[in-house]
Image (cartoon, rainbow, N blue to C red; front, side):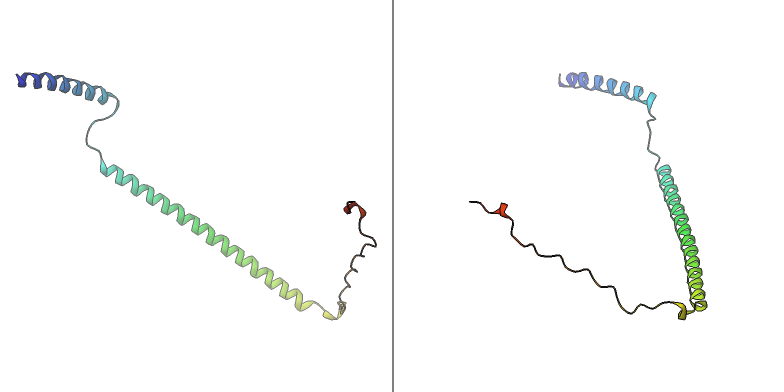
Length: 116
């Protein structure tokens, strides 16, 4: 008796489960996951990120090299202009300009502040 009740519950479950697998296999593949493809995708992404970072570093190094060259050229040009400049022609100001005088104090306090 108990065996018949168990069979009545297991057979519909197995039929329903197999029908669900059949229907789901139409939309998605059912099988073992392909971990090799996941590893390969991760490796490809890592290599691509590494390559992108390497390109960024190379670009920044090139910009740094160019800016260093420009800085050196400017330094050289300033040094050349200082060497050719005649310092005797420049006016030398020995006195600094005087600061403005402080503001005046008011003569009378404001009468609006006093309450009677």
